[in-house]
Image (cartoon, helix red, strand yellow):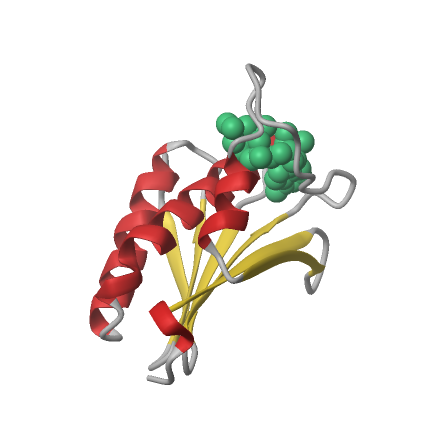
Length: 142
Ligand SMILES: Nc1ncnc2c1ncn2[C@@H]1O[C@H](COP(=O)(O)OP(=O)(O)OP(=O)(O)O)[C@@H](O)[C@H]1O
Ligand SMILES: [Mg+2]
């Protein structure tokens, strides 16, 4: 089904969901993140977190599409904010910051600006995990 999600693990501080690689998944994943942040009392970082998630999910769908494979989002509440990760099934291609231009390259610039740190790690199984951490202003402890 287009943009369908499956909840895999949901706990007090961690929500993991699987999504089809349909572009509708981007908006649906954003809605899930908004709900998670509201439950965790983290509405103040909703705007940057939702923007970062949008870019990471869009990238996974457009640059790491693997036929028959879903993507996975995970949101983890930390002591100072949230860690977002978007896992895809493509091990050959990796995120690489580009000079923004007509052909794009704005997504990761935005991620770099809005997150405290971001990166790309191996995931369990085939593929990779692109993650970003967004903390509350002032980096105070929650
Ligand atoms: N999950 C990913 N898997 C593989 N390659 C990726 C992934 N995310 C990003 N990339 C690579 O990094 C590049 C830069 O990503 P970025 O989001 O900045 O730009 P873009 O997606 O090309 O364009 P825009 O986001 O402005 O529409 C991409 O062009 C792509 O080559
Ligand atoms: Mg992009």
